[in-house]
Image (cartoon, rainbow, N blue to C red; front, top):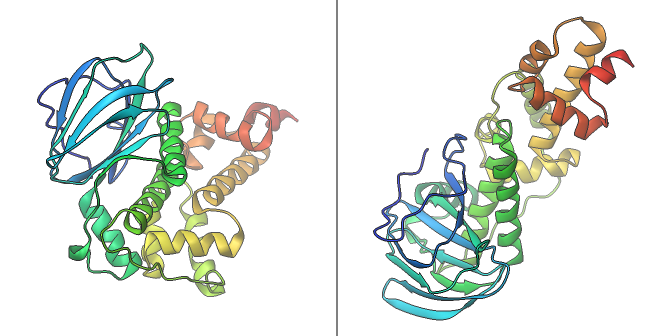
Length: 293
């Protein structure tokens, strides 16, 4: 799902970085450098999170749903605007490098996670507006999304989907009018289910494996699947998938004379450079060095 365009009435400006062209599902992440002036927003199908990245506190006026807040915004301050809530902001002074991160997450995705993960009627969930809050976990998720945005890694979809699910569950737990209890699953996946998932991953390394596909194999929510998978083998699905792709690449590098580009594509990487970057991070050497070593 690609989020619809925003409805900024004033203060419209282009982001420094955007995930709009990276085909991330259910979530749009953009980094802005904020000019002095006013901005308005009205998102009917998305909840919006603003994470301040400013170097020094700045005075900011906000109006959400008829309520007004005025204060100094510093690095790490967060505001949350629920879907269908008109938003207005005005700042009289910004430093040249002052900026913020905007995360737009589809409201229907939040509803889906509530229903599948928490067995909760999504119609009863109401996201609470926040003008200025500190939330280390929410900030950490935002910064991890920003890091992926900055790297421009086309092969990170599984990782981004995992972060989107964690973000959705966190919002439901911490920022809804009725905060449901999240069911606890202990012990990881049964051996039969774990083997089914691992076999699927090994058989489809060259394909764009989605978290939703893996969870659907076992008929469970993406959040529960990620949690139980990590309990089972000690690593997240996206990390395990990357490790297996690198192992397949190592095998092909040693046993065949195929080009590194061909090997990259067969192992699920979109380019020679993509494989080289991930290969070097996990092994400490380039594919070429490994092949001749």
